[in-house]
Length: 143
Ligand SMILES: [Zn+2]
Image (tube, rainbow, N blue to C red; front, side, top):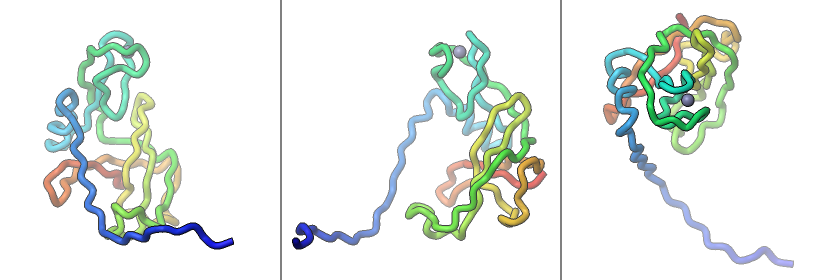
């Protein structure tokens, strides 16, 4: 039995993301100023991250902004040896889950720490960065 016929295509892909942020732009504005904020439901009090314009617990659309601070604790991490296509220009990296006071957990890259040195319980700090396109993003570093 022969293999089914296939068409091979080898092309570089440019990924373009247009992410609507009309109801959560305050998060990005605060991040540009080094503050790390998220949404708190005005009805049930749920604090969520990433910021949510619709409460995942009670579906309310009323919310306020609350600061998460900048200090977190490393809860777990993974070392990404084989990078996905969209990060092919990056060296292997660590993705961490940090827990902020109050229990909110955030997923972010962990910079400045070698894989063998990363340990759950380490104190982390969230830091704002800007991509080469000028878009804000955030990473964890050691506190
Ligand atoms: Zn709610």
